[in-house]
Length: 177
Image (cartoon, rainbow, N blue to C red; front, top):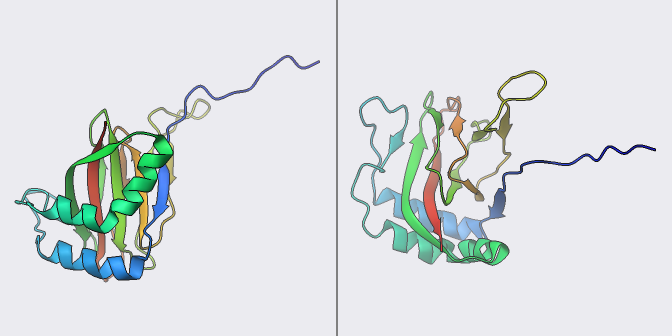
């Protein structure tokens, strides 16, 4: 008989969560983001308010999306605390180079404005393919209102926005308590 036992040595968890009642929350989130204007800083290839003062952003976001964060907290049986939150906009041609958010905790992205042909976030497998030695990318399909959560250490990027319509996300980092 066959005595070989296949298995997986490592897996990286990720969660996609639909924003409940998104059409209502979208209006609230767009209003929120409007009160923290985004700029291009230095060599950045996108617009963000991450380098600006954002007092009140976290509390307001928690009030709007607390239910979704609660669902995740329940699923992983741990309390979560947002440490930092910001928004990013991509006009036509804007993109984000590969980066990660640190080594512990979770990172979330809520797709607030997602034009039909806007590029999705691509996640980079932290090791090369063992047959081809190539880098493996995982694009996670999303629609407006989708929240994607991964460990902060997973490198990710987005290709240039080819749409003339603005692509906008809200991103945040969470501590696991």
